[in-house]
Image 1 (cartoon, helix red, strand yellow):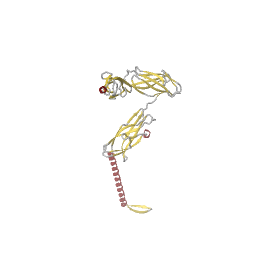
Image 2 (cartoon, helix red, strand yellow; image 1 turned 135 degrees about the vertical axis):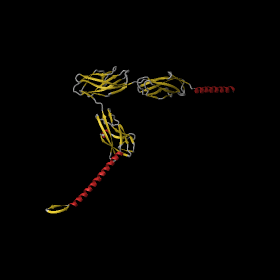
Image 3 (cartoon, one colour; image 1 turned 90 degrees about the horizontal axis):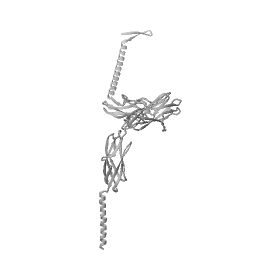
Length: 425
C-alpha cells in the first residue's frame, strides 16, 4: 500500500510499509524499557518491605509525666527497645520534635552515664538501659510539651518513634479581685499535737487600702491564730496597702494530740465588705508521734561488774507512741576508759507497739577501784532521746586479790628472813 503526497506542488510517492515497520520497532523498544523499569520498581519495593520486616522493633516507653513542682535535677523516663527480627540493626536515634536545647533533652544510657545517638541490636536482643533525660527550664509555663525521636536504620528506613508528653502544672497563684494570696508552702508535714506556721504573702493590686477580716475553716478542736509576720501581736483584721508589694501574714495552726494521723484540708478566709470573701486552701499532713521507752529485762538498774571483765545487760526498747520511730541509736556516758558496747548499735523502723532487745556489754578498766559507778545509757531518735541511768557495782578482780596476797606474803617473808639473820649474829 502506498500514499501519494504533494510537497511543494510536487507529487511524491511514499511507501507506508517501511514507515509502519519503523514505528513498530520503536513501540516494542519502549514497551521493553517500561516493563524493565516496572520490574526494577517492584524489586526495590519488595526489598524495602523485606528490609522493614527485618527491622521491626518494639518500643516500650513511659509516654507521659505530669510535673507540679519542677526540680532542678534531671528527670529520667525509661524505655526498652526490642529487635524482633532476625538481622542485626544499627539504629539512629534522631530528635525531630521538641525544644531539646532548652530542656537539655537527650537519650541517656543510665549505666554508662553517656548520651546515646545510635544503638546496635543483635537479632532478638533488647536494650533496657536507655532513658529520655531532660531538665525542666526554670521559666517554663504551664502546659503540655511534646518530644519525639525517630528511630531509623542506617539506610534511613523509619523503624519506629519515641513520643513523650511532659505536662507542667505548677501551682497557680490564687488571684482574686484586687487581692493576690501567695502561700509560701501549700502542704506542711508534722506530728499531731504540734503548732504549724503558714506564711502568706498578700498583694493589693488596687489603688486603695483594703481591710480584711481574718478567719479559718478548721477541723473540730483545732485553733488558728493570725499575726503580722515578724511580730507576736495577735490580730483579727489586716490592712493591705497597695504600695507594699508583699504584706506578710503568718497563720499559726494548733492541732490536738488526739487528732488521727492523715491529710487535712484547711481554708483561710479574708473577708472585705467591698470585694467580698477571699479564700486560700492549704493542707496539713499529720503523722503519729513515736514515744521511746527503755528498761532492763529484769527491771533492775544496778549491775555487778568486775574490773577488767565484761558484764552483759539486756535492755528492752519499746515504742509506746502512735507513729513509727524510724532509727533508734544508742549512746552512753561512762567514766574514762570504760568500754560500753551495744548489740545492735541501732534499731530501725520500730513501729508503734513493737519492742526490741539490745545487749549492753560493760567492761571497767583493770585498775578500777572497787565501788559504785554510774553510767548513762541514751536511746536517741530525730525527735528526742530517752535516758536510762545505771549503777555499776565494781568488785576487785580475783587475780588482783591473789597478787596482793602474794605481795603481802613476800613482804612478810622478807622481813622474817631479815629478822632471823640479825638474831643469829
